[in-house]
Image (cartoon, rainbow, N blue to C red; front, side, top):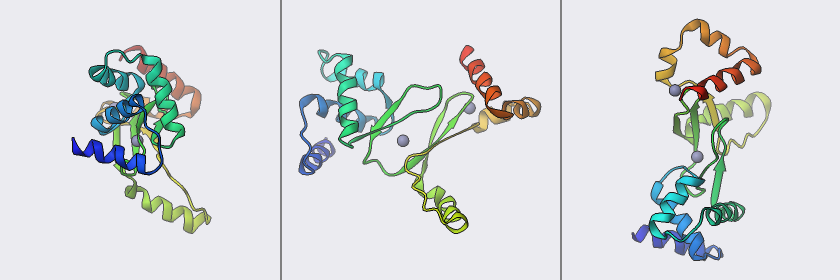
Length: 168
Ligand SMILES: [Zn+2]
Ligand SMILES: [Zn+2]
């Protein structure tokens, strides 16, 4: 619990004005210790205060995003996910078949940064990346022939995505 107060105190010391709604949304994300959809935030906030409506949660998330407290990541064909920006830097691997999301440490892409700098003299700001691909489980179920098809350009992969949605 003291972690909560420390977090809120830190934000106030940074000059952020925190209303009770903002506090509730921040604490919901803090407790989840990861990413939540807007509905996920709403569910958690409701457990604390059943009188908060969903539009307040959406508005508050948007405001916190503008304040730099919350970041949003959008995965293709998936609802937007929110998290606290002060979480340790990380990137995401998202399976385009089953939509499983894995967090990886941002340091894992240091080699890529070095390569871009050395070969292209480009100082990449990788920020909060979302890389799509296949998780180990889906990759092992994927027949070699169909994988070749799915990787063949945009139209085909869109088609494959539509298909994945049809049978969750
Ligand atoms: Zn993230
Ligand atoms: Zn998968």
